[in-house]
Amino acid sequence: MAMAAASSSASFLRPSVRRPHNKPRISCSSETLTPRRSPDENIREEAHRLSISSVDPRTPLFSAKYVPFNASPNSTESYSLDEIVYRSSSGALLDVQHDMDALRQLTGAQWRDLFDSRVGKTTWPYGSGVWSKKEWVLPEIDTDDIVSAFEGNSNLFWAERYGKQFLGMSDLWVKHCGISHTGSFKDLGMTVLVSQVNRLRKLNRPVVGVGCASTGDTSAALSAYCAAAGIPSIVFLPANKISIAQLVQPIANGAFVLSIDTDFDGCMKLIREVTSELPIYLANSLNSLRLEGQKTAAVEILQQFDWEVPDWVIVPGGNLGNIYAFYKGFKMCKELGLVDRIPRLVCAQAANANPLYLHYKSGWKDFKAVKAGTTFASAIQIGDPVSIDRAVFALQSCDGIVEEATEEELMDAMAQADSTGMFICPHTGVALTALNKLRNSEVIGPADRTVVVSTAHGLKFTQSKIEYHSKLIPDMACKFANPPVNVKADFGSVMDVLKNYLNKAPRF
Image 1 (cartoon, rainbow, N blue to C red):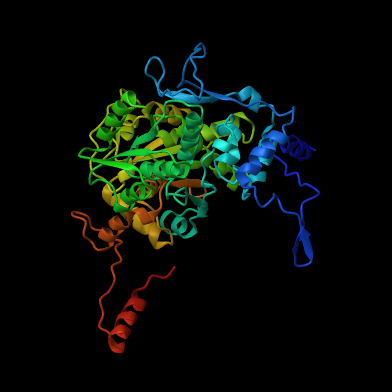
Image 2 (cartoon, rainbow, N blue to C red):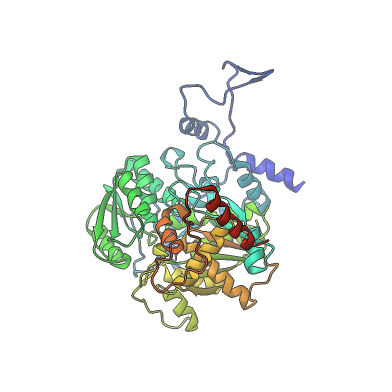
């Protein structure tokens, strides 16, 4: 009975396709199929037509607004999402607050049914892993304004061999958020932000373009989504501190790229000053809209486990918006009855850029920014993270942990993971190092269901892998290096090399 009610109540939230009787029928083998729409109507136009023609008076009116982050219950300060605002009147971070009473008009079972019904579909915009949760993201945006590459729906990979061989674990999973449009999890947030900018421009708000400071992945996502929408993008990059693969993406997508002789924190300072003077919309994670998209990865993990909650989720942390986004996604699922608990979160930092780790080890005493040192995990080479307050709140709320990884540890972890069939980024190496340390200390048990969030595709970081396997990294043993073997072009030489290899090859 509960599932029947769920299906009935959820059905009026998603547009149903009404097929005109006078449309031609298409023959396919022995079957006859009715086309979903006329040939001169695309999926966006169809969604717009259906959203107008199939409004049901029973549909709850969902809404969201900006409020000061972690404000007191007595606070009345709020802003429309159509306002261009990044901080509260006191200078605090903002958060997107949803009308939870309206969302509670559906039961947890009904929300699960609705979200599951959209997976794998092409119906605009619900085929996206982000927009399949539209009511929890930007409930009031018109589907016409959404800019999407059907991002999300990323693979949750059972790391069977890695877990068994290196950690003695049977239930280890890797959430490949880097298998996305531009090769990183940043797509999840950028589709939301650029969609809202698209809406603001149609409302004639003063927005001439969108800008960001970036260590690579943010700029790639921003430039791609802005290019799709025809919106100018401006990118501030620290000179000589990101991979070529990351640099070429915004250039290829037509962004206006400034290579600046500073680090990420310096770029962030400049972009904030610029956006306060010019009508350029700020796209960094200071902008809480991005976190609304990123939180859907947490909901997606639950979906992929058939709504069973994992014990641990480990996330690499730099500017620290992502750890809060995961917490927020899990928390919304618990508050709205989709699950009965949330997992413990671990934030993993590079030892060369570890302000959150130092703050955690001090017992959450006064936070101090650090000067970030060079790290192969370049996307988290951040010493003064914007979302420090959000991260601390999330970790304290779920009994979370912070760990760090040295350069050698993270590169060894990456090499080990790659040797079992993965091809991960250095940031995922940071997260795997944290997992390894927590397993060695028996904080994480051998049967604990654990998810490591992989934030970017390994193809963006091939140079670091080449240097590792060529043993070209100074002061690093590169003990899992696997360089090619030079051999003469004759049968005997090749046979000698192969026999030597096979005699020494590991047995699993």
